[in-house]
Image 1 (cartoon, rainbow, N blue to C red):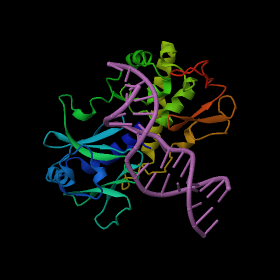
Image 2: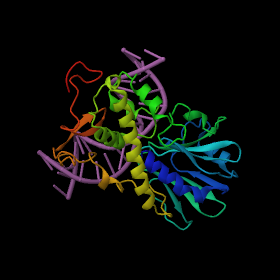
Image 3: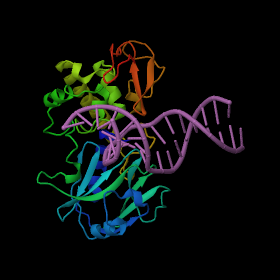
Image 4: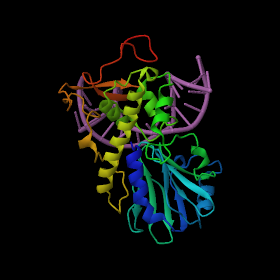
Length: 289
DNA sequence: AGTTGCCCCTGCGCGC
DNA sequence: TGCGCGCAGGGGCAAC
């Protein structure tokens, strides 16, 4: 569920609780919550014990907490991951996967119903990025993100524009919701061939992705509860502001035509049939959609 | 090499 | 009321 704005809200929310805090104890309640750690959960816990955490970072939907040994604790929330800061007296959540107890006495809990998310430890490269996420492209909030360069790379893709927007090696942070919102704002159908977009269209849809995520970030930030480091699973705190996602049958705010939902790559795509007309021929297929 | 499809999970709401 | 099915906002990786 969480896309870039939600992950960034978690990162900023978690920061004051972890920065300069020492880990005294780590409990793993579900093996799947620990990823890419061949030595297993007990080794994972042993490696974290005694480490002091630094200011959390983020790229796209990945976030990490640098450790005082030069490595980092990486987290991906998957579809349902949450972080929660709790007191020692709090009852265990049903989907509690990992609990990190700090010297302050507070506990950082990783809770994940669907277990698509997880934690792991990794080395950092010279630029301060965990080596295992080197393949993740810069996101639109990265100071070195270049929208023109990203638009050029987008226009070389031999795939539908929405598939490209969701590809985290092209630009990171965009998920199914914000892809649909960006396409609606740019008035592009999700099935448009990336290589047939004009440069202006490519720049537009990428710029709109940034704009809509920034708006979500502002709202997410305002609803942040310091003791319950978001993202609350069903939340939808930004839902009111969505123009197409989840609005099947409701009128498009721009033209009044009913929003449509269609299946797309094991997910859904929402779009306005008037503002976002389908291409004569969808990219990557010989038939009309 | 670039692109696509499959799969990992649990829970909830809906229709029968 | 009960049950089966579709669906959920992600990403890694095998296969083409």
